[in-house]
Image (cartoon, rainbow over all chains, first blue to last red; front, side, top):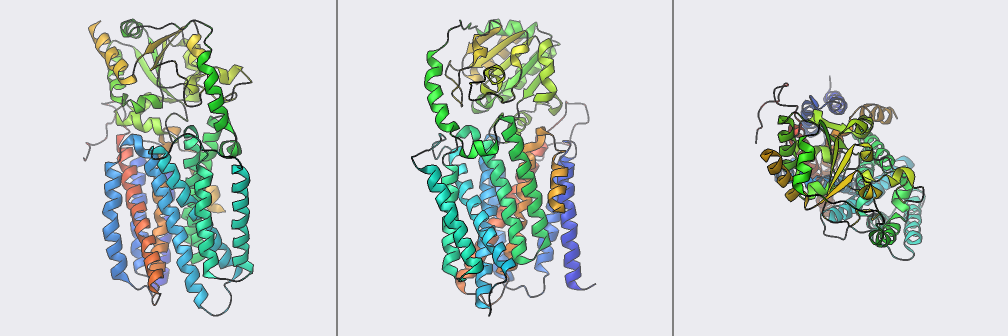
Length: 465
Length: 93
């Protein structure tokens, strides 16, 4: 077996480990093993790459890798679980950026050679540069928004849509020029800069509540950019791995959009952002039905003497860092023989599946966490639904008010429970700025407090009973 | 094409419970771009700016790979069943 055959074989092994890694993620019991397999596969691929004939500059490559590996590891160790979406956005951007840089370097080495670059190569160079660059810049903006460096509110200005479409047309024209016209480095650099600008402009108008969709989409973009980079270098390993990521990102994007009851185009280009602001003004002024508020003691009694309780956590719970107190409350209730479960809406948190991670961090066993479809039928024979820091995902208007901006969004059927307790700071509307009729339902009592204070008070009171 | 099909096939089996680790896991996988970056950085006789650009790609790719796998592992480690029902080994850190 020649050296190149051995390298090809190693790359094949890597692809298999990646597929197994994803396969093992289907159950939490062996997901971790899968991740390790993936890491081993990656190590094999990198080692095999170093064995390639004709590879030079080992020293500088190894130095750079040795210098930056600890940076990645440190960031991954230090990051808080609430900051997970930012972290993922950052790594997306980094991967996309690398793909764009590869296209740039590879283009240069082709330009030096005599003759034109083949159509196949130039198309993949253009795609890798374009998508990678959009993904890099878009992810940086998403990171900024999630990290509160940039306003999470949608940033809109007149002519935005037209401007973005115009820019995209220019980018496509530049791409076609590179394939069919003069193959000049400055055009590619222009394309990369323009694509970065597009990435910025494209994510800026998207509101904070839509971030789960954007992150999933940027994930898909990065996958595609890596895949295009694979075509540039004629490496199946990159093509296949990139496609796996692209498929996963696309799948998650569609799932998230469906969980919000909106189409992907609506999230990306829709005027939902503007609508939110307008509706928000009205919502607070309304409030025709009486809102009942309760003290922590009342709620503690309700919970302690219930048989079945479902906790509905929202991002507000994570912001208040109340996950650990919620688990203590659940422990206390279970000690009294109450059946406690958690209902997790697909868009709870700021990226797909975020809330599950936050609760897992607080040592909530994952067999108590239920998906929306699984648990919705059970609300009817639940004594108390405890809603903490969640709003829009419990809003019955999504089911029965065709005029509502969130109409059609699948929700947790909290209002079917015998009693509903909503822990909320004030009557201010949530992210989407929409009035929630649940709060005026006669079965609902409001506990106005910070999530963390309220829940730790509840723990005390339940203990004291 | 096969990869796309396979991707959808495998991923549709992942429960929503694990969607965040799925994202960070696929994040680590697209760190495979590092291999491409190494190949490009290993081409001899390039002008300095190309060396710098390709080494920058190596740096980004390295952070992507290492960070992606470490953070996914950290996350997956937290998913546990109820105590007593086949508890995972002790935490490492």
